[in-house]
Image (tube, rainbow, N blue to C red; front, side):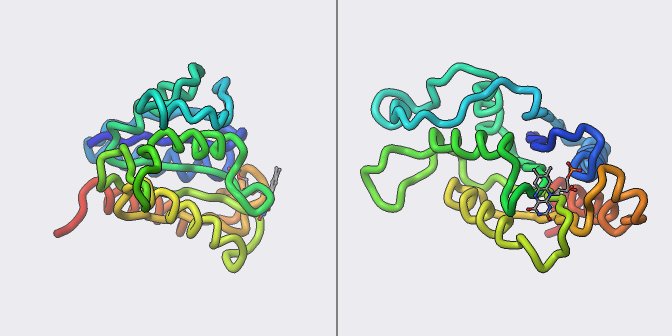
Length: 193
Ligand SMILES: Cc1cc2nc3c(=O)[nH]c(=O)nc-3n(C[C@H](O)[C@H](O)[C@H](O)COP(=O)(O)O)c2cc1C
């Protein structure tokens, strides 16, 4: 089973990192092959709306560090999107990837548009935010919808709330979130039934 984890925080050892590392480690222990991309280190452009992926090719023609990421996501079984909440949304580092997912859509000759991705991939959304859980749940709803539109069949959420400082998971003793990360990995790698 292949897992691609797109890590969208600039903090290499922050809250998103701890949750993502916990998820990835458990998945690897269960035999999954995990490939992590540190988006903050990539030199990548946003979608240029050139529409070449609709008129001439079936892929994004921008050649940059996201090219390999876009190719790798095509063959993954599970996609992990890990991001801090910045101004009530995902980080800019991750949003660049999401916009480039436009290249996964077939030309708009029919409505609804169809996805070029093989249907049935699973999505795991990992988020970390300062505010309580009553705020910004709609961010997960929005990206779940976008990836369902791209053919993903189920979404699993790991939402870390009330976490401001990079070490908040540890100082606030949030074992519940560590456990949720492990349980989610077990659920997606070895689903029951
Ligand atoms: C630019 C910026 C914008 C932020 N915006 C929000 C926000 O809108 N809501 C929120 O609850 N926290 C916000 N935060 C706090 C982060 O989401 C929080 O510190 C989170 O734990 C960071 O995750 P990380 O440790 O994985 O980097 C913001 C932080 C930064 C640096």
